[in-house]
Image 1 (spheres, rainbow, N blue to C red):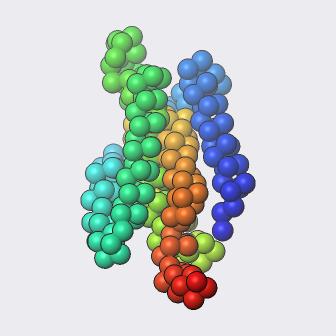
Image 2 (image 1 turned 180 degrees about the vertical axis):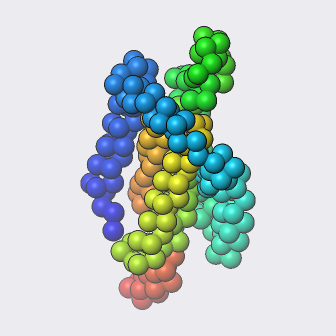
Image 3 (image 1 turned 135 degrees about the horizontal axis):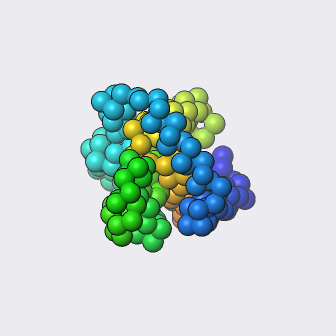
Length: 229
């Protein structure tokens, strides 16, 4: 079970990592040099755009919503509770809002635009690379599904967590190879997604809506409460 102290530590660490990434991108620090080197490496690999433009869609918001919303809607209807789908929507709003605000405030061109001198000097030329929305979506939204529908410490939770990690890595590597994002964009996207997910987990736990307490054991807890009265 994720304790409050550990949850706070995770959130604080994730926010600090995101702050460092923002500072490095804005000031063009040493991580910016790493980004440029990674762009040249990806360019020299010449990966199949047809293949990796498909695998990167594991982080596409539209696809994730198409898969998850019907499941969550059906579960919410069956349980007569808004909690399953509401948590998902809160995660979505959190990560989309944070990512959108950073995209607008930081303003960074995409790697595939970098080699074009005119793209580099034009203000407002698709300066929305930082952070990666695909990376944030993948970690936050798929992560919520795994967290809500599995029990802490279970084999299913561990397998689901590793599948989310694998999907996030696939999205990141794919995006790097087809040069739609810099590595720091992807790392920042992961940080945004994880922050949003942890925030909702903390919110649901604080309000007593944690599914580990309300789904499997709700009827047992209710009976014990009635008996005690």
